Length: 254
Image 1 (cartoon, rainbow, N blue to C red):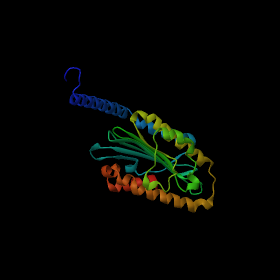
Image 2 (cartoon, rainbow, N blue to C red):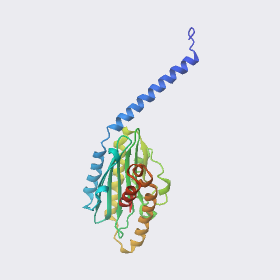
Image 3 (cartoon, rainbow, N blue to C red):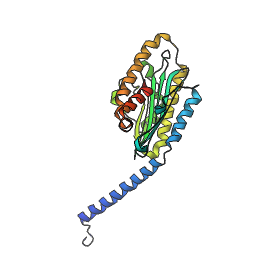
Image 4 (cartoon, rainbow, N blue to C red):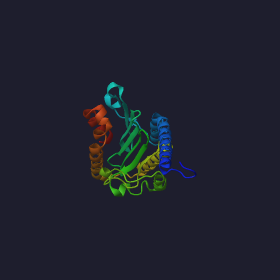
């Protein structure tokens, strides 16, 4: 620097150092928030909401699907399944591959004579982000408007379009957001809000045996989409093996 003038190069170096320090501090804060997320508590919260609205009966799950540990202790997936008077299958899976990914996935498949769509939700904590998805899947006449009351809260979280491969059967009104780990409570509230609307819709859905053919078609499309693009082709398949991921995907989505 000379006199009162600031050397442009020195200024750029100074600004770059300040920017780097700011980025490091932000990442440190994000990482700290991420490591404080209680995924087991979130799973318990989802189960409590299900149990408060449905009379659930446990379904048998093969031992290695109910509790699967990865090689050399790398990761663990615990899965429970239920049925109710309205739903032929409810599956909750707790994925723990800390610190890479940790969270839960939920699916609800209605009985064939219940005129309601399927529902899928997940909340996954990544190293510096948390992703949350919750949507209804099926024919548009059964999904349209179901999650519309939550549009404003979803928008505040930056919710956007869902997965391209599920767009044809999705409601178009669901939660599909990725945000700072510091917003995990807001993401969880939005997800469970969507679940509450879905359970209300299922509870009041008409029973119609003539609907069984349409329901079977809808759920077959749901399975095809998620089985083709879900656990089998992601981290679970790579860590736990293709054969296990195939069976896990069938338990969750079929």
